Length: 585
Image (cartoon, rainbow, N blue to C red; front, top):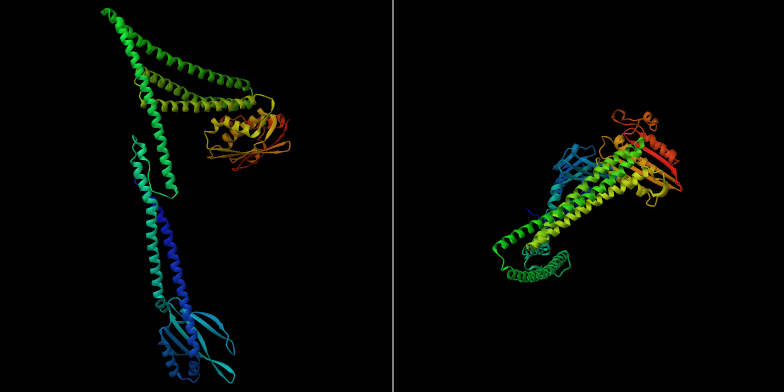
């Protein structure tokens, strides 16, 4: 099977996150450098405006076009300036040099700049299509204390200038990021290799060299002075080796005792054989044949006795199990015979058959396990008698016996729990006795007794009840009410619904018990809800429904418990019951 390197996987995830962060930080630094350089160029354009605006204003005012062109040529000669446009007061172009762009491609942003005299407006211009940006300002001529706009100037620069200025910085940022990334990859690779990969490989190699004949020499010896997870793993493995050594020593001691006992037994057998040989040396050939026949008969008799013992034990186990089953079935039949005349006990009869079927499975498994254990004991006895018992066979017998006993115990406990839960609910349903019950625990017993019915569905029942809800009431009435409500929900409300939900909320308000029962099934219409508690009203009349379930619930709540019941429903949203009655102590 192909294995995945844990250190490589962890290193890949860490470095991937670092690469993403480094890329983002580098991009942000390049963007910041770009914006800073662009702002610096804009500041230089403002400086050029202050330097040449006076001379350009006078040249335009005096209609000295040649001087204005000369000044424009001087400005274009500056590497930062890619284009210049000088216009008069009527926006007539006096000089246009370098890169130009149409008016439609310019984005003009107004910016206020207070100067002496009237407030003037200055504009930042840019073109997203050509990568140009710049600064536009008016030419203001002052004469006799009055100001007059005689034209405007537009200075253009480009992103190319910015990139030329920050080119070295970009190379430095990228190079710096690459160097740091390479160094980090190297450091992380070395760290993961020395701290994780190599120790794990060394542990794996030592574990693969494990020698069952000399486990003490198979202990892990890794030079690791740090108290980390690998050190804990090493100590745990070495502790396991120590326990194995102790077990082997105990096993060797036991084996020596067995060998010693066998030696003494052999000596006794030898002495007996010698004595028999001395006493039988005078017997004839006929007596020898009879003795041989007698030995064969004895062996057959022992085999028959062992077989009879095994069969007797199996028969006894079967009789005990059958008696228990007969007793359980007899109790169920008695409960059914008392409740055959009333519809409210029909659910109990169905439940009895399902519980009986549910009990047969663990009982059958228990019988099979008992037979299997009997066979194991017979084989063990035969091996002991013939001195053929080995360590491996003893271990197999121990393991198989434990598995058989565990299987037997689990299935008998399962059958006992089913019988106990059903027995309490069945007795309560045929009894009119008022007794104290813990409502939360009693609901669990009722739901457990309905397990054979509920396990065929994917529905869930959620009970919200205080753990200390101790009340005096007719326990049989409580059992019949919840049994009928849950069966109605499963059979009618949640039919053809997968993973339905039943919710039971119980509150104790002083001496009053307040129960809210709700399912998320099909629900009832207003017309059906009006006849819900009427006798013989059912939505399954053609499929065997009698319509007495809710009528019995209503009578039990109002007559037996002396309480009240109210039902609400919305089609396709479920049916809810609100039940109230007082504590009877």
